[in-house]
Length: 177
Ligand SMILES: [Zn+2]
Image (cartoon, rainbow, N blue to C red):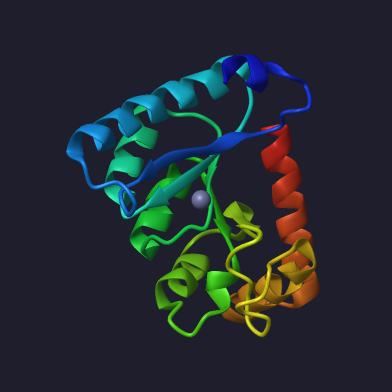
């Protein structure tokens, strides 16, 4: 993996992180934590940003990312607004996908509202999580405006402003500025 990650075509290391939804065995979860730390260290060594997957493992993800700092984003962020604030305090970005447009998105909406706009990113998680109103279809980048629109609505700004903000956030993230 480190050989591959060194290639100049590789802009971001990921997804790395913890998945306790699919993995219940405590020993394997411990192994996930070990590898997560090593992958953060790899990204740091190569001076590349990383994208974190965290499912049913928010506290452990936070503990590791606060003890092993780097330049990263949380993909499909699903934590609370309090967690959102804690991650951004450490300089981590939060990426939101189609779930933000779903009916039960209260936590995601609160998280989007709770942090400075400079930490907000959009993503597809393609082919999964197509946003409303195309929920259930194969997701693709052309659906991103639905997510940006929702983000603009809940932050009470124009779609244009939100789109420009997210675009410049992505640029900054990829340049690690
Ligand atoms: Zn993921």
